[in-house]
Image 1 (cartoon, helix red, strand yellow):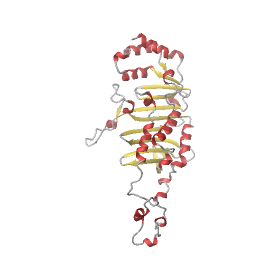
Image 2: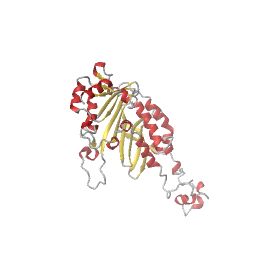
Image 3: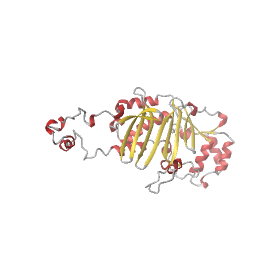
Image 4: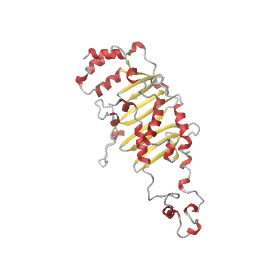
Length: 336
């Protein structure tokens, strides 16, 4: 497994954004002001009263006095992304804590069909059986949770049923539970002959402590909540080849999700989509959900419990609960 892929998956959203926005408008759906104004004008001019609508496409008047569609404000009084984007990202990382939950395709982690059975098959979600008429199953997903203190004062990073880490000092100090270390070892060890027996290793580690100090291996590599949001923004925009989400000109509309007033910014292409949902506060907007179904990839990220997720954090393990990197290597070598 590629560790960078395991801990940083946000770039795939940029690929989806690019796929859904780079194609441009349908050339047959040209609007006023495009390079072919004569073609565009045919849709807006009344052939029985063209003389009342101006001599050129730029002078076409709407009978109801409304502006052309391409100049209309976003539906539902949602502000444009350009008006809130900087505040959205800056305000989100400035909070005290949050719980980020991401449902991610198992294939991105090379975790399909894990023997521990923790990967969830979306086609069986809610007890529904596959429709024989469906073209393809949705595939397996794994759930990633990043939560607690924004800057890593005891924040957690968990991969459903497999990995569990505690982060401190902005993620520079990293501890992994013995339970999750063994779960990863069982799932990812390519060959039984390549290392100690998993049961023997587990017993030996549990005799020494409950957490392993993984700072030498992963210090600064696993994301705190703050880093997750910052990396998400930069990697997504870089992958999409844009400087700002506002460059995509995605229109928004007001809505209510989970009892909260939100603004929804959604880009669609057939059945594929990318959607950004923002808590509706023009002065202090916050991320609510980001989801996509594009290029054969389905992914959902939710941001909940803003400033109320401190309970996810744990105190830094005591020295007598911790296995050092040197002790881990020594135990492993003794079992070979």
